[in-house]
Amino acid sequence: MIKPCGDKFCVYDSTGKKLLGEHPTEAEAQQQLAAIESNKSHSINDVEIFATGKHNGDTYTDADLENMVSAFNELDFAPAVKIGHTKETGGLAYGYLSNLRKIGGKLITDITDMPRSVYESVKGKQLGRVSAEVYWNMERGGKKYPRVLGALALLGQEIPGVAGLKPLHKMFSDGNGEMKIVEYEKEPPMAEDLKTYAAQVAALEAQVKEMKAVAATQAADYEAKLQSSNATIAKLIADGEEKKAKEFADSIKIPALRPLLKAVFSAVQGKAETIKIYSADGKTSEDKTLETVIADIAKFVNEKADVLFSTQTSHKESSSDYSNAGAEVDRLAKAAMSEKKLDYGAAVAYILSTNKDLAVAYNAQAAQ
Image (cartoon, rainbow, N blue to C red; front, top):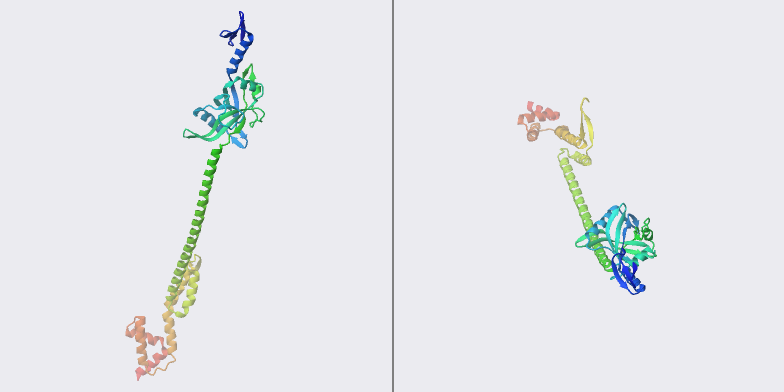
């Protein structure tokens, strides 16, 4: 303030007690007061600068705001106040942010060290809005921060990006400013950063392409090996089944039945289906696989083969003219000894019992 002091004009502080200067004219005193006011910094407390929600295509949650507060408290710089979203380096700071905190779904801060001219522009609505510049995934001091408040831009004619916050010029009362509004704008990466990111993306895409090519080659190789393995397994199974069927057929004592029984055995071998086999009296039964049934038939045929062949041989030989029945009985008895595992007497009895015509001739010759 300015007070007359004798024939001079004195400049005092706002309390009117501390003398700041004396001037011969009031005009000079006004100049000093104007210089003091222009050099005085101003603060605006409790300013809302950001909020949760979707802004410019990006969604921000309570966790994002908390990350911004944590980064503010840990980083080694205070976000500066700018006039507009200028991109050039070397720009002046028109204040700084302090005491950043989260209240509800909003970020609140205090603006300090603001020049009077800028302060008056805010108060006079020339700069009525603010816009937070938010950096994503900033690396500093060996640590990565998911969300960082980088700066606060004062806006004039631009439209805020965050709705529902109070304009700056409506926050003044009793000459002491209070503002709670922010225009959101995410700071884009610098050109050099974009080049670096583009190179990293290109390298990753090349690696993915190479990995896909290798994977395709490996898949084709695996498929070829799998088909070859399956073919080998199928052949081994088929060969094994053929060998088993052949061994089964070779075990049949009646050659004429071998092709038929082999075909049936090949068709049913390995099959899990069963059929019910009843006893001769029909009182009992058991479940058997078809392969087991064919094996039982083969066993029965083999057991009866000797009788069948002997009967057939006897029948065939009944039409012979036994001019020397004794020699013929001797020949057949010796063959029966080897085949039936009999002694000579039992073999002779067996031949005579199975060939009536030869027995008649033999007995007739023996009676002579």
